[in-house]
Length: 423
Image 1 (cartoon, rainbow, N blue to C red):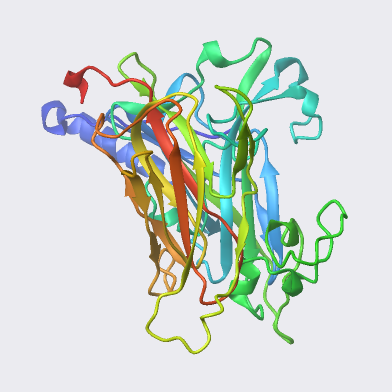
Image 2 (cartoon, rainbow, N blue to C red; image 1 turned 180 degrees about the vertical axis):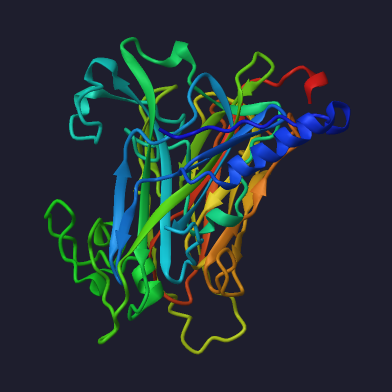
């Protein structure tokens, strides 16, 4: 079992030597904590650090696994942030040029209590009910509450007060079930590979893949993407290169507070620029999110200098309910140059620009997207109306081909605003 350590800041001058000694004891407890989890509390905010199950990688190998019933704060809580990165057994951050973090996603689900003795690994779907977000995509596609990729270390996920993502609400948990969480980690070991970007973009010829994970033949026009870098596939390594197999983890930090009536819940929406949809009636639509797409090399790329070539992809969409935008951020891959969400009148609801690294240290790897800018509108200043036609735009450089790129956009929406005294 994990051990939890809670710390509450008090005035040591008031309570003298006894409290000072207690503080030193608590510090020693933290320093000696060898469990995957240590927890502390800053005023009313609690913070916990967890490790995913281990995933093993060698040069060129892909790990793309879903881990069920992960360690997660319990009870009726308000999640304030969720941050993650890949680390080794010693806790050292792993740079993207060694292990490319394609994505991690965290999803909520409900599991049958009377099936608690059976293995919770996704094999028996009759034990599950989805606890997906409020997003528009079909079935459980893009149903996560949190998820990022290479940009994870420098992208804020903080939800400003008094707003939060609600979890553990007893009224939302189906009778006979309990709330659980799962995480999908998609990582590619690019040590010693022939083409680091090609492996990160899952270009099929580098993986020698012509069939998907279920054995179905791929279309000859499919050049790369998720269908070519599924779990245990191998990207081509330079001849003679030898690298050690190593154990890695997703280390994730959750900040939360206990739920109170002063907190305003937000809905999580994830939009996909590949979404093609048709209206079924006034209030329902049939969506088809493809998640990824290909950016073809521009015919103007050859011989062109000092000219920025890019491809702009757009889709329209609308929310089933309106509300106030509290937070926004895009998700793009290498080659991305920015994304924006527009209102029906052309106003910019949120624009998000990639931050490219310029060094070698983890979080600043040259040539990789290491962060995305975020939007924090003043509460009440950006409102989306129910049924309003929104436009999502994703821009990528097309000076060269890019396969398996994504143009996703996350927004948090509050259906109501709190009393002005709380803002």
